[in-house]
Length: 326
Image 1: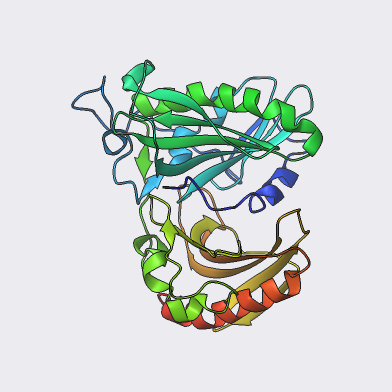
Image 2: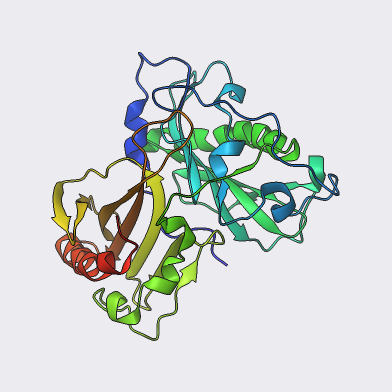
């Protein structure tokens, strides 16, 4: 199973939240989030499976094992959204000025035999990445991996990403083995109860060139993200997440939902457009302004960003009415 869809662009706006005027640790907005001392006990603490350690994988909050206070004192760290479905995003600026978005989550069934010599019987393995990212897989004894992945904000910082991921791994493992992984309480009409692979139909995916009914979707293990890849390399991704009101190049109301559309700069392999719509408010401790969101990302060939946005908007027009009511 793949660890993630082609998703490097999505979290980069969070990096703009880190400025020289920020305090060294900010976890949540506006108030700090208290990380629980423990939320669960283990039958076999020396041989942890993913469900032993994290609970129900569909409601596991990856931010619960990412404690900003455990990061190096020399880093500037910010977590704007302390509740997440697929991955928790933390903005980091190191003492040397390297900036990254660290993502913790992306549960997947790895090819590793399972476990290792870390506490809880966990193992840590390097993973293949693009040139500006570096990942470490924290592997449970059942072979399921929790990914710590660092993305460079600037290509010139790419060489620092592995060191950042390595620094984050140990505090994440410590949180896991000490039972601090927590589950989310879902709101009424939550998208967290829905697998996007089950609600997006072949008729909907057909708006993206190459995504025919014969193209079968892949899903993230937590069941909040689904993607389709055609033989020609075009791709569609649909994901449910927790965040703030979506912003983009343009915004409009589509089928009763505020929806933001963003065109991204082409890279060597694709043109990318996102269409992100609002869903219901999400309450989490003292943090204000959170909502559930539904996102569509369309990847076509370089030079086709307008076509990608057209397809994304067509899909939103079909998908939004099939989601739970606001």
